[in-house]
Amino acid sequence: MGYHLNFQLIWRHFDKLAWGLVLSLELAVIAIAIGVVIGLALALAHVSGGRLVRLAIGAYVEFIRNVPLILLVYLVYYGLPTAVDIVYDAKTSFIATLSIYAGAYLVEVFRAGLLAIPRGLTDAGKAIGLTPFQRLLHVRLPTMLRIVLPSLSNTFISLFKDTSVASVIAVPELAYGAQWINFNTFRIIEVYAVVTPIYLVSGYVILGLLRLVERRFAVR
Image 1 (cartoon, rainbow, N blue to C red):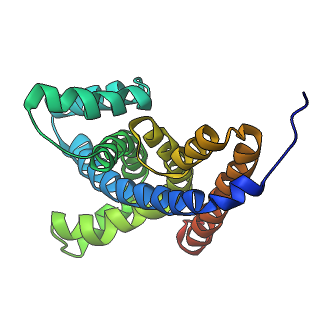
Image 2: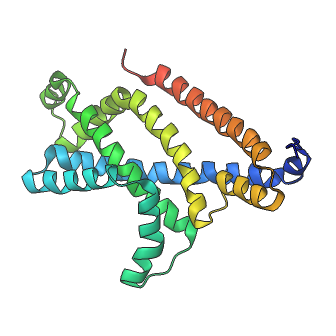
Image 3: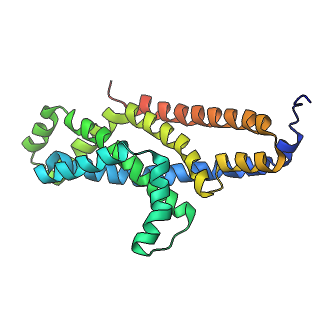
């Protein structure tokens, strides 16, 4: 028997995909926001800290970057509650995992941006009497953010796609919605033929918005 395409069942359950996309975007935004805080704090510590601080941050970065995200998701969701006797739901677990994962990548992005700041800018800040905190707030951070905008755009798009890993712990995001439709309708070709363009269009929309920000603020 031949396989006949039938998209009727996909449209009937399209709400699973629509709400899944909303949740995927929510997961990405929250995790990226927390990841930015982690990455920026550790980047500042790495640039201005001592040798032990740099070694500890380097170990964190190398561990996270060399372990698959799906394994980290399993460790945090299944392993951590058993080890330290804490309870949290799948969504919270995934946000924590993706935030830690994002922070490891953003450490290197922000660290490179801080090191790329022209020394003349910080010297000018000293010359006009700015304190170290004022130089950080008004000179180093604004300049660094403008320098790293292209790298941030690529990292943010990658993290949005990584939200699909949440499906392995039954977080009802977009990929999980596609799996649910597949398991209940057996229309695997149709559902992934619909989900793929959703990811593609969403990614391009996010990229377009980030490119607008980049063109507005990037160092020329």
